[in-house]
Image 1 (tube, rainbow, N blue to C red):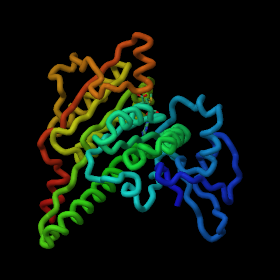
Image 2 (cartoon, rainbow, N blue to C red):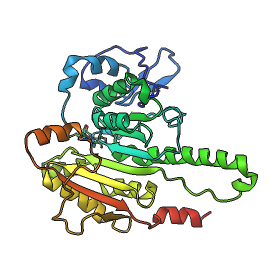
Image 3 (cartoon, helix red, strand yellow):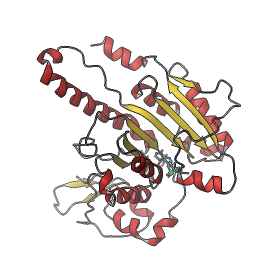
Length: 313
Ligand SMILES: C[S@@+](CC[C@H](N)C(=O)[O-])C[C@H]1O[C@@H](n2cnc3c(N)ncnc32)[C@H](O)[C@@H]1O
């Protein structure tokens, strides 16, 4: 099955007409060449994405999408062997960029620090994430270290992190079993590789009635709390002060899991702690506009859901 991950990007136009235009994203089910099989299409695996992504017009792609639209409520389709096929060493720490756009930030970071992390970018706009995936294809030296997944982070983050967590736990168990056959009887602690999360210049959705479209929700913070190990970090940036403040508030409201690097909400982190600017950040700084930043560290507190699972066996 075609996937929304860069590991398997071959588009098939079989059984579909290659139309262009956003209306195609509304088509969820189409017949395959094999009339008996139905191929589910999500916005991120539509067969005409390649064509649309390579069109010069795609660079004028819509700035914002509505993440609450029904087409973006679908789970993305991942290859069965994701993430094993995209990350050669699953035990590496994971660097997650939510709302990565065309992926320039992660590509630069992975180029500068190829051995430090596995890099994963999530992006909702289908054409834009397709372009990020194409950029990976053109950089063979990064294969095995970086992946861009087309999805709605508010729908899929938990599932993706569960898959990653299961894959790393399986790898740990396999390695452990080579040394100690009894290790299966011991409870294998949940392997938490998610060391760094960035949410940078998220769509502001200024109108009050659109506030629900913002990517940082209590549920998203909860998912991060579940999968991030103690001392891992979340870095937030925005050129819109109220947007940064609101994201920050969402993390401060789960203060048992996330500790703000600054006690006062009136204080911001002065610099980009990663040291590599995002595409949006470059454009904001070129205009001499301010950037508001916050940094959170995951506390030692076990997530209540994890505790409940452990107690239940
Ligand atoms: C203003 S851009 C910033 C891109 C990049 N982080 C940067 O700083 O250059 C925000 C990105 O987040 C993506 N986005 C918005 N909501 C999202 C969601 N629910 N899931 C995944 N990506 C989302 C948008 O499509 C857009 O590409």
